[in-house]
Image (cartoon, rainbow, N blue to C red; front, side, top):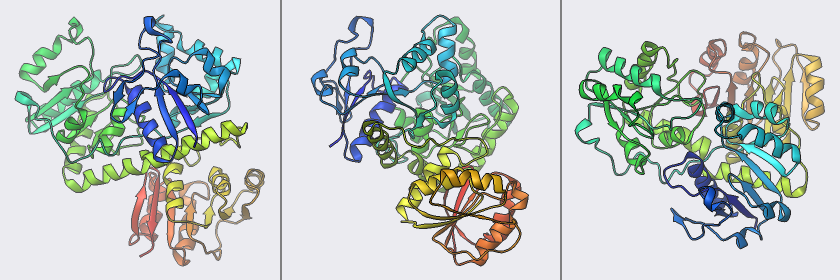
Length: 495
């Protein structure tokens, strides 16, 4: 059995990093890994003094002696020097690049230079982040071309739509909005407060905004909240709380200033809670610019009117189950550590804005494995061709650009890449069709038509967030059953 030692600080319900570590360990255990937490201290006085025997929701911190016998160590926080001499160490990059930069820029903590120095020294055998949006940035900062992506986990048993609720006390309203993100160096929910007030003034008077996770609320700069609490939208205001599952079940909408799948976003989704977020967030259709309080209030209104029913909340939870479940996360960590132990970094996937995203691939790969897909017909060669080939799937890919086809053929040696004029109807068959070409959605009708006229039972359509692609989905697959999807990807089954 693979033994994995996680070095991090135990801080139940008070640290997004710890909650992610906690759920990551549970995810690894779910796929047969012996994963444990080693806590080497929570402050300067206790550094390298192991705090063992601390229990929290199924995880007890272990002694350093256990870690010395592990196969791989994962560095989240303080990790003793002797660990680096005993086993390969993998670095987990939890922080947002900009936040890490600001911490050092403001002379608070030398995060960026520390990471750069450590990576350059070669002490880490591999590196990963939980957020695909950060991969390119970290690669540029560290000069390391092999930052891996591990989907961020969420405990679907702890965060559920059904269970004990929070009543919000004297501040309970007809519509209860919440903010629960920690206020960070780079991103704070300041503007969301005024968007919520404008929502109350303009759309629904019986609305309260409850704010959790805000530290130093006693500072004078927060004095304006008192007036808004007395006569306006503000309800409960608190620091970090340990009963967020109850809050998620009781609220109507989460407002977040983040675009990535933070702990709060994942937990809210698992609880079936609708979310309004800034532009760029892939996890909710309700997005707006936070500094434009009117536009953000309008997005809150759209969200409330569209999701105020059980069916919508069930769909939100299903999406969390597809993206952040323990099996996907645990297997991703298992593959990464097996790769490290094998002493190679594998063939690198160069994700980019024009290709299938890491999130899309997580959903699609999981679907392929669950449904035992053995053969795929693809329209538009690219990263997806390489990924399909890496899975050992029989793949035929129709591509309209010869130079691009030749380039992908070198990266996917087992794929059958066919040069196609993008107009004629090819005869196709397989378990699944993946439509991501030709380039530009307005040119893709022949691809949709070919799949429609074939006997292929399942189709995965990429770029469906674009009107030029969605028009072909509606024309050819209007009566097909929608199975799963993301903001960019839609998987449909023939009726």
